[in-house]
Length: 98
Image (cartoon, rainbow, N blue to C red; front, side, top):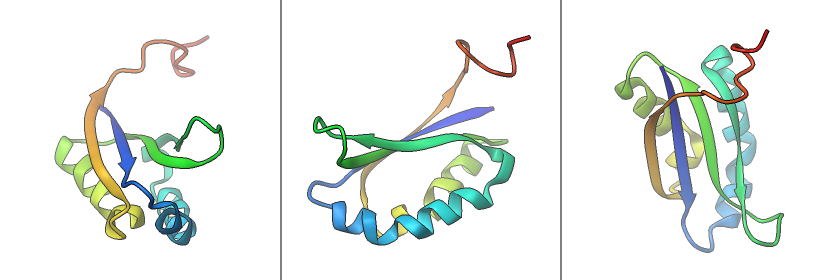
């Protein structure tokens, strides 16, 4: 099942994000095919990162929670909230296109 990890940074935490970004990216790379896609949310200026959207394939909600908790961003205390929700990819799913 797919899970969307919707992460919102704490206010004024860009320095924490930038300091931990290399470890965060390396962690996501270790997920291999479990990682469907990921990227930062950005502010109205179109550049300042202020959250993350990560979609993973996991066997259970508990596994998705463990993956989220293992993220260096989470360990560094970057996120104000992390919402983990089962997600159905229905539109523009490359696996469904032929």
